[in-house]
Image 1 (cartoon, helix red, strand yellow):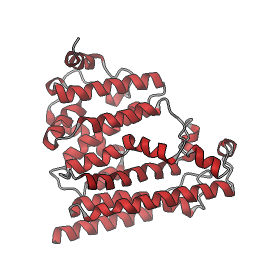
Image 2 (cartoon, one colour; image 1 turned 120 degrees about the vertical axis):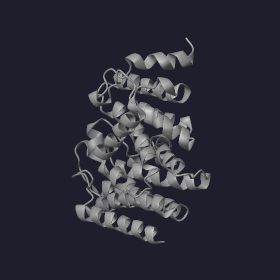
Image 3 (tube, helix red, strand yellow; image 1 turned 30 degrees about the vertical axis):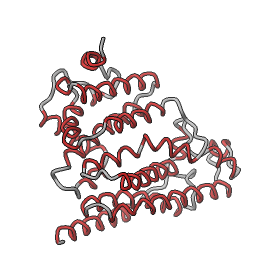
Length: 316
C-alpha cells in the first residue's frame, strides 16, 4: 500500500477512543461548517486565546482559529486519554490525517483539516511545524523527567515554539531573526507554566524541574512528594523565575519588528507569562503550597492595555 493510499484509507476508522467531541464525522463538512467548528473550539476552550485574537485583523482570525484547533485537539489526544498506548495511536492517526491534508486534501473529513488546508495553502505553512508539535505530545507519553534546562528548551522547541512560528507565518512574517525571538517567548511561556504547575505535574507523574538543578539546590524528590517548602526550594524557584523572566524580556524585542496589531497580541501573551512569574514571586516562590494564580485585577489591566494599544493603532 502506498503512503498516499494509507493516508486516504486510515481516517475511515481513526480516532477511536478519542474524546467524543473530536470524533471523525461520517461525511466531510463544508468549509464554512469546518471553520465554524474551529471557531467554536477556539472561543470556548481557552479564554486567553479568544481575547488575544480579538486584537488581530479579521482577515487572519479564521487562520488562527484553524491552527489553534489543530493544536488543541493534538494536545488533548495526548493529555485527555488515560492510556499512553491509546494516546500514541491517536496521535499517529492524527499525524496521518495531517499528511492527508497536505497530500490529498479532498479526502480530509475532520473539520480541523478541512479548515486547516485553506490556511496551509493560503499562508504556505510548512508541514514539519505541525509534526513537531505531535512529536512533543508523543514524547509526553514516555518521558516524565528532564535532566537540565537545556533538555527542557529542546522539548519546548517542539512543544511550544512551532505555535509562535505558525502565528508569525499566518501574519505574513517569514524572517528567521523574528522567529528566533518568538522562540524565546514561547519557550519562556512553556517554562513559566511548568514552574506554576509543579504540584499538578507531580500528581500526574511528571517532573519538569531540571534534575541537575534539583541536585545543585539540594531539593529532593521527597520534598516534592511531601510538598515540603524549604529554603533550598525557594532558592531554586527564584533562580528559575529569574532565568525565565530574562528570556521573556529578550524575546520582547519582537514587538518593535511587527505591525501594531500583532504586537498587541504578542505583548498580551508575553505579559501574561510575566504575570505568572510575578504570581510565583508574590507567594514567596512557594509553588508547593498552591498553584500561583494571576489575579482578575491583573488580567483586567493587561486587557485594558491591549485595548488601548489597538485604539492607538486605529488612530495611527
